[in-house]
Image (cartoon, rainbow, N blue to C red):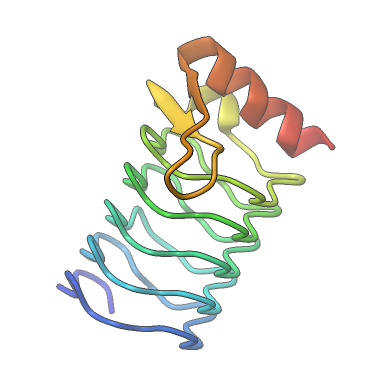
Length: 135
């Protein structure tokens, strides 16, 4: 799927483990409960629905995760160097062992429930991410 254009596609509960998603456009795609373990590539997940997705050990270096719905997603061990997490919804996301969080771009994240935003901005968001990765 390298360089694939999957904007707005529905991959709910799909198994895409170890897929090569280098430069793939998955913006606005639905990947609820999808298995994306060990995927490779700086994928565009802008505004994608990744609720309860398994992104463990995924290579998300330079990935665009702006406004992505990552509630209850598993990002354990994911490599996030230079990824953009601005506006990502991260309530109950698991980040244990995630790497590269000190380099992510983040203006703000949302930890609240639907209709009840709980925003963390800039350094506060970065501290939350680093703490979540180390717990």
